[in-house]
Image (tube, rainbow, N blue to C red; front, side, top):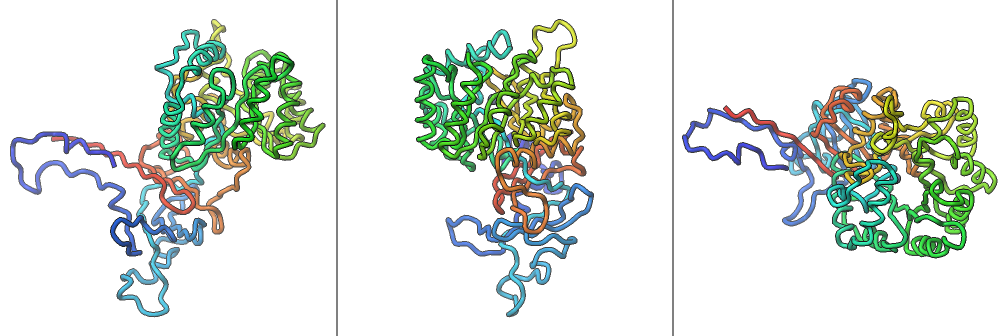
Length: 464
Ligand SMILES: [Zn+2]
């Protein structure tokens, strides 16, 4: 818990106990432990009772979690076995149910399925002050970054990646997929650095190959990507639209992923020009090969710039190929449209057409305070708010995009709030989903695999 302001105020005039400030009650004080532990031992998380949480339909419930799974949901006073007997272990009678190991009062908190971050760049995070991008566009960021990445140490990357992971988790995500640069100047250093992170989450790592990956000039980059897969990368990635031969780039990546039985996650058409469109090439290649390990197409900006009939036709092929599309509003609002003197396009993909076609559309945060996006708060609720404002999603659509749909894109088990579901949850001080997205209140409790992974409380003081 952060240090409260009152402790930083030096008081010289004595006051009586009843006078003056009374600070807000910190959340840690709301955790009640029922399972005894010895000195130095961590909390027992075998069971957890979240009391008085509000669900998105407005109901107030208790949620009882056992062994990482939601075991019961009931009216306050009814879900957890502790309510049968709130007495201590010592005074319970034989046959009475065990109290939960840990109990938390979440009155005033909305309970949501935890979001995941489907598209991050942990190796680039928090580098904006070191890597200038005066043009503010994609190629400016690429030029600045390629020059900088030769200078990065493994230790530096690991430290920034760990800080970013903690920020994402504190805000509510329970899994992250990160792209990690593989190529000249950085070689495999970024991958080694991210593999070495010590943080609450071991992210899914996409080996993000450098261009070109095609032709004789691409031989070294292809070798590095193969090495990255052998070292333990979880997903194969690249950026075919920036390759001299996008089709060959896609085919190489698909083959590499198929051989390794790994998913594929490509940066696709991160440009306003609707032609050439590599998304259609990707869909055709996936359909032709029957690739079955999961494909994500990130960005797909061009698709949003096409005449609707053309975009619809491609969207149908994308859906048929089972490709999930990840829309990345932060970075694309930042990078795209700078050449337009009036009415700059928003740079988002054709979300509505893709959904109508039956494709999975997820939302991600992408760059976090680096030259590709100098803003960013590592918060899925920031992404959701932008999907509402810039993409015209409803709050429910936007939250689905950063939670349920993002999980589908990453091949993760879904976590709807219901008995039997994985207890990956975000509780946030709010009365409705719309309010949660609008305020993105800092008061949050993040539950991952049935235990509290992060707990944040904001205290505002009004010194008198
Ligand atoms: Zn990206």
